[in-house]
Length: 349
Image (cartoon, rainbow, N blue to C red; front, side, top):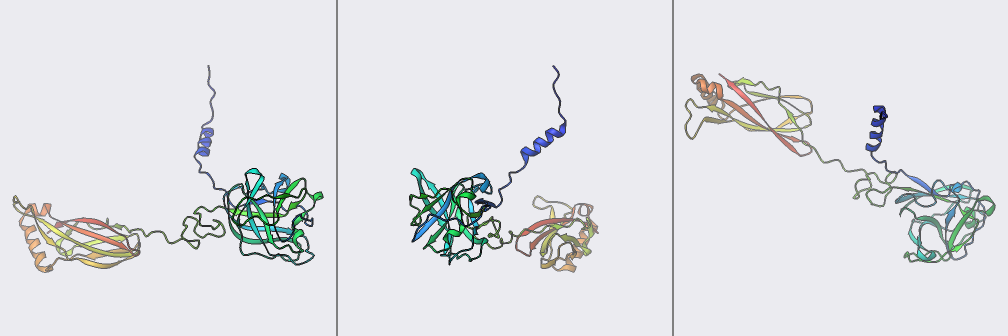
């Protein structure tokens, strides 16, 4: 039986799709899409009221009636008719369905806002935590004559079931009953953003550092990184009186160095193979990223030490072959961390 074959590109495309990271949902609008005209009456009564849509036809939503993701409501928009009188202050209230046909009032926006008398869309900033599947409503403590201006009447919606609780839902979140006012639409839309660090600020427009719950301003600078030294330009074999290290750093900072010359003895003993001569320690040598630096090396009692080493190198073939200088480098970045390295230099008379 002949097996079907497929182009390799198909397999590569499938593999890429499987390997691609999941994309986090962006800010989303939910509630009413505000296409219905404003001006219908509502069923709320004094002295206070919570109003929300519990059912909307899909054609009257921007994609979801309830919050499509958990996060923070960062704004809400009302569509208004021209109000016949002043508005009572209002705020957004998150509403959650409870068992037994009851409802809970969850978080609310603050402070209260007072809409303008003009018709049209008006958007208000908010910062209200919300969970996926929650509803949003408008809540007023005291009904003004502008209350009915954000409702659509029965003839302007496919089907809708707004709910209202009068007095408004309890502030402590305890479950309460709500009444139905059929064939009306609360013209309310909200925008929700993710809150990855759970600091109560929307990641896209309110939080300058979504990965750090300790701040919603700009992210603190990343932890400082150490700088590295490239000393490959240092000559591998040098005269003892002209020792130097040639290096380049990949960042700004300072350099400290020390080390020693290890001169092979003409005849090694059971306890020693070399004679050591310590280099002078140098500190605080300035480094600039990408700028070559040449550092001259000196010994303690420099002239006498050089003569002693030269004499040993001239008098012993073993010393000339096996002697070396080991330079220890410590580079400290301007931000703090340090890194260490070594350079080995063979000696010539």
